[in-house]
Length: 64
Image (tube, rainbow, N blue to C red; front, side, top):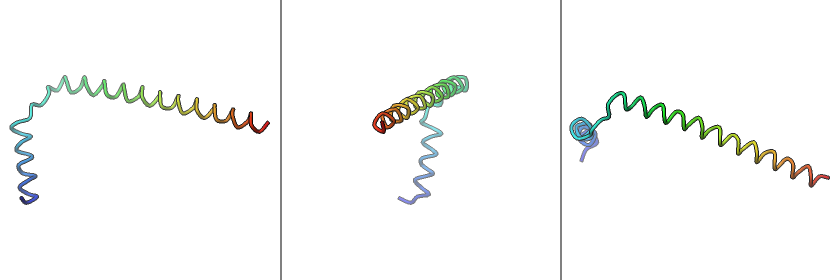
C-alpha cells in the first residue's frame, strides 16, 4: 500500500465514519482540559517546592 493511498483512505475515514462533537461541546471540554492543566501544573509546582525545601532542610541539618 502506498503512503498516498493510506493518507487518502485515512482522510476519507475521518470524513465519513467519525462522529464529530458539536462546537459547544468542544468549547466546554477545552475549558475543562485547560482548567485541569493549570491545576495539575500548580500541584506539580507545589510538590516540587515542598521537596526542594525538605531536601534543603535535610542538607542543612546534616551540615550541622
